[in-house]
Image (tube, rainbow, N blue to C red; front, side):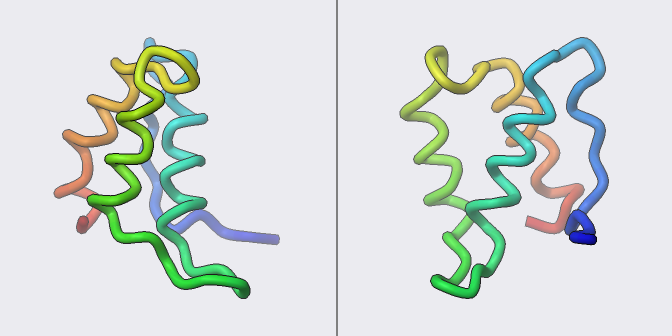
Length: 71
């Protein structure tokens, strides 16, 4: 079973919060086929999808939580 790298509840009042957090975790984690994508690059990638594939409010919550998560 894969364990999450951090625990953060982004879903309270934000139905798409878990999706934003999951995407962020997936692209910033090291994978067998590539190294981790830097946090700044990961956020920039998600910003391009703000309001379409990514809920902007959820992305804002994630960005505010980054220092608490050690990023």
